[in-house]
Image (cartoon, rainbow, N blue to C red; front, side, top):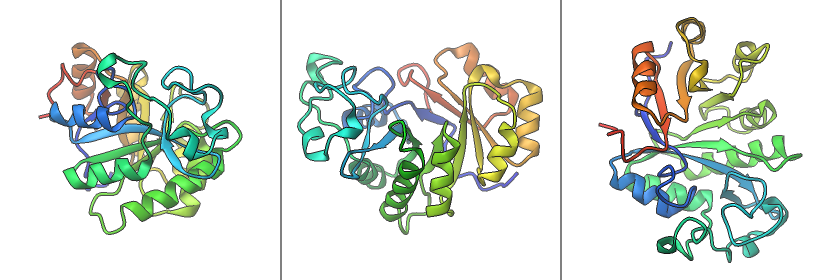
Length: 245
């Protein structure tokens, strides 16, 4: 395993977990106020190719819009309220572009885990564009963002476009060939549903040279189990419970 792993153990899920509207600058600011120096976010493409942050394919849950986000141009998406659904305090918070997230992180010495979350049918293209934008935005930075995805096609697109950026394969089950796929994609990390990590799977992944990260860890017992297993990263909603120090 490579000794050079530049990222902190604790990662704030979607910026600040559930305490602020996910995937917004407001969430990053709140996570930072809780001491977090690494954030996880979800990135997809607008219809005109702008990389913006949103988890769902559709707009209804986390914005004032309707329909599929990736089918709308950024000029339309930029007008949506991405905070009012969460609470009155965040009403009017806009969607965030990857460029604005990068500016925040670089200005504040923070790190980013960008989950490539493609609109269905755009898996490879989204990986290509996200990787190209990430390489541009973090050019010259000592610590690049970590690109992750559940979709091997997205990671393949990222690999082909910006091979120097570190990648991680996200897993919600240990499907057949997961380890070989991560090796083929040149990944540096495996990011699992935390329940999948056991002594045998941690040993298997680490013996193959991978860093071992977990999502979404919101209980103290689960976090301690992962620390005791010797894993490398914990993604949490509970920025109010776990001190990243």
